[in-house]
Image 1 (tube, rainbow, N blue to C red):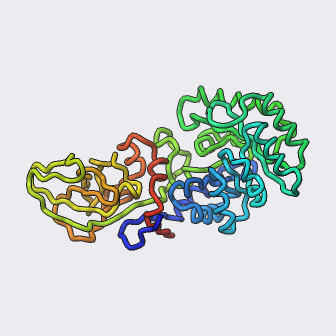
Image 2 (image 1 turned 120 degrees about the horizontal axis):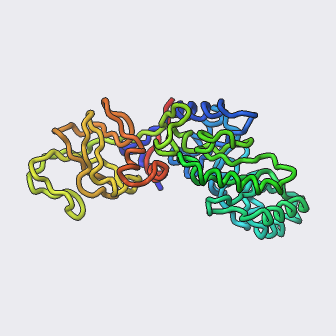
Image 3 (image 1 turned 180 degrees about the vertical axis):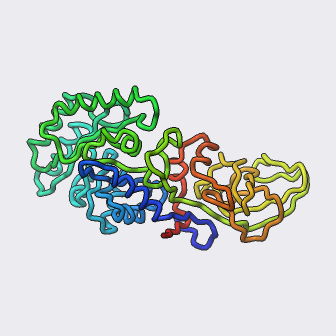
Length: 371
């Protein structure tokens, strides 16, 4: 997808905010625990390479990605730090993963056996983190018997380095600790068959690291808070101030006075009841502004201006309080005058989470890095 460099719509990423968010958590970690910055999904829409550069300066020790291609992007950019793929990788990519010195998540003995068939006649070493399903229900070994068999297999085959073991907590961002405590108990039961322990033992996603730091082990997977966003969406207060790193602005490219009973947009879902100033903004659902945002108010000159009619692929229309010049700034995320729109505001309006809102911003949007 081409980056729209010749359009005034841009994501502005504040590197100093990312630095503060990561460094604050790094300073809190005890026992020299490693902080792996999660930069999957293009750094949650913020730009994986740029976030990784800032993360290293802020004290990050490694990175987590979702898939091999994201890890290769980091390696090709020159990053030498450890990289862990959190998802399940294809067997046919095992040699490439080992060559790139990237660590994999493994959730079954069968995967290890198939990988060994590829690696056994090579000098390649594959770094392995065993995933445990303690209640997330996504990937991971189901019981201690399965886990013990996998560990024994790793020990017997020289092409594997048993580097880490981990689980993922489903409710670490909630006040009710019942299910969280159940998962902790299950993890502890798993660990009874792990001897000796690998280099990394990690259970802490962002929420766990912020609110259950006693569980951190010797590594944390630090994600959404690094971008200045509260994992709970504001439901639970973080232990330190978070600085949102992302803002999104565009401009008015057309402004017109329309008469009463004038319909706007596809499906004619909005019709004016009186004379109204309508502004057109050159951004749409192909950029990540979903059609669910119809009716959501953007900011122009400090005024709240609702999106009227359906969001188009490349444009949207807003109701203005008065005529404004073409080129007037429109704030979609960020501050404008004494008002502010957050990713959480958009998430609340669209009945989703801010993770999704940030990740939906496509590569067509120009990203500008400041500070």
